[in-house]
Image 1 (cartoon, rainbow, N blue to C red):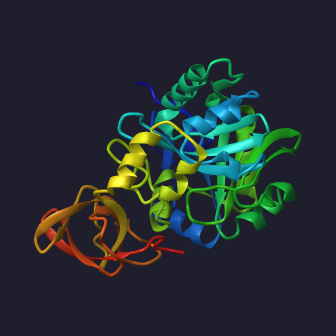
Image 2: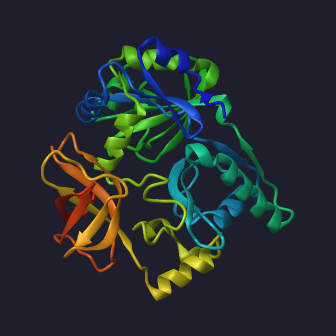
Amino acid sequence: MNERLSPLDQVHRSIGAKMVPFGGWDMPLSYADGTLAEHRACRHSAVVFDVSHLGTVRVTGSGAFEVLQRAFTNDLNRVSPGRAQYTHLLDEETASVVDDIIIWWVDPETFDVMPNASNTDRVTGAIEEIAQSMGGVSVEAGDVTSERAILAVQGPDARTLLAAIDPAIASIARFDVRRLEWNGIGVVVAGTGYTGEDGVEIAVPADHAEELWHAIVAAGVIPAGLGARDTLRLEAGLPLHGHELGSGITSLQAGLGWAVRFDKGPFRGSDVLAAERDRGISRRLFGLVTEGRRPPREGSPILSEGVAVGVVTSGNFSPELGHGIALGFLPPESAVGDVFEIDVRGTMLESRVVKPPFVK
């Protein structure tokens, strides 16, 4: 299958990006200075990621709110137009997390639903299916991913540097969403991100993506690739679809029950998930730290007294902490401070349970 290209593909290649397939897209893994430098730039200054591979399903109409309430786990009544919300789409039969999603509530009857790269069609299909099952609901759901690019500007200096480009963009508060104009170009800006740092994500028409990218970089923001985005999200203790979320993994097992509101009424997969809640989960996601530079790796068994009791879902070396960190499933009764061993290709690493985020 041919990979889809970001509207910024030629820009990335012109500045030496290492391009890799990711979720059906060809995206930058890193640039000339490398992942470690990009990671540190985000923690201590500001970087810009091209995250155009993320999907955008635009849901509009007078019935849009009602349909999304039935589709996803969280409760939109807890927010309002001009705000963003984290939520899940569940499998109806197993309550596995089909995708974790940010919804940008742009205006009273317009929602930009932001799924992961490879799940856009599944999310669109689920929304359409629920709309049809509700009969007579006025709603339209369309994939508008190809119409825009999304640039994520993240880091402690992100707002200061963005203010030189446009103070209005820099002023968007955490989890706020606003339509703005930049240089006469309509953009949608949200105070969201995936690094644990402050910042914003900007949806810009594809034809104007290069113009905005160059303005951001000229202001002193450093380009960063998806390699740094992954190490940053792990330090922040944030889940990644296909690792901490996906087939066979429920919201409750992932420790994300706060994104589930059973009291709002039925939603896709709610009966199955409620049954799991009532009988008790069999495993839960925890944070683990190790000593030394050798990191735990995905799929490594977690052992207690020589017996496998869990598995690492994501592991890496933390550039900020200088040692290994991991997320992994363990028995639900495990607690902060508990000690386990992680088997990394025959080498046993002593690990200790901690509460994420690893870097605050």
